[in-house]
Length: 423
Ligand code: EPZ
Image (cartoon, helix red, strand yellow):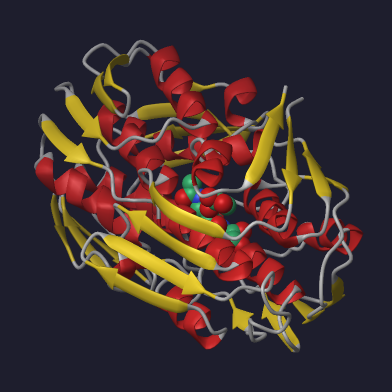
């Protein structure tokens, strides 16, 4: 198992480019299943989760060609199985995103129920309920979802919890359904918007994306298209917090500030300077390495977009561990997304957890130690803490990081960090 060795104490300075968004690329890869014509994608990040999804699609018969480092073309003209086996689904929950497209185009699909994961049980009941509303006959047997439908019919579907992949699955299914589908209480995340933009280029008729109510008018077929995946706002946000904590000046190219309002607000509240133009964001900060108390403690509460994103919760917990006072971090989306707390305590952080709220008392400094990554964003928060900790920190099980951060140690080294991957 690889690990990262980080010597803390170095302010970050320089420029890096943000990669394409993992959580947009994953559903958009599955959208290729909706048509027999080729789909060409640009700005696709080279990540473990993307490789996993590609393997699943190839297993089904999709032909994938790597055109250049971040550009691929997918051809789903010859699908020979509509089954997503357990050993492929168990490692990545997003595999559930093949359910809607396969059912809509082929009328039958067998997908293993995704296991729970480190951050919570994460059921898919809303995905299933929505497809049933569209006329699908769905059974759950032996840990698999077996779905059948001659042709899905448009329906009015209310999702009582905002679900990102639930909205994505149902939007893709509705694109080929007969008639009109209305998704109420739909997710508004930028990755849902990006998927919709790709589907529209493929000939889908979608209105209202980015709002609570998405209306999809089904068409008989979708066709070939080209689409560049939107930039990864969570990767960008992670590096922005790193710069705020260590101090220095970091420019993120190919980043969009309009996707990060809540995060930028909170960073400014904590004392960092954040400036941007249409495709880059610059963060400048004195940082805690220069002056203890340079960052003000800032409380956050996660909620669906455009509110503060749950995928940035762990990163702001790291910031608060070395800020000037006390802050709370409240997680309202997942029931167990505080796995990073114990690991940060090993670095000397003062954090107490009460239910879904963590209370963080800023400390003058953290001490390097050996810690363990538990899930994707928790791992990122340990890297941030290590960048300001005194001495050396070793982060184990960093395959979690490789799922969602392209060339992390390379990008941080480019900014001056002393970070090394040990095979
Ligand atoms: C997506 O997960 C993201 N993953 C997650 O990013 C992100 O944290 C999450 O949305 C919230 O923004 C991808 O897009 C691949 P949900 P998703 O369905 O769709 C409950 C990362 O770090 N729920 O929006 O799986 C669920 O249990 C990952 O990149 C139901 O109860 O999340 C959760 O509590 C982590 N029934 C809440 O809704 C359902 O049918 C939100 O889940 C579906 C969801």
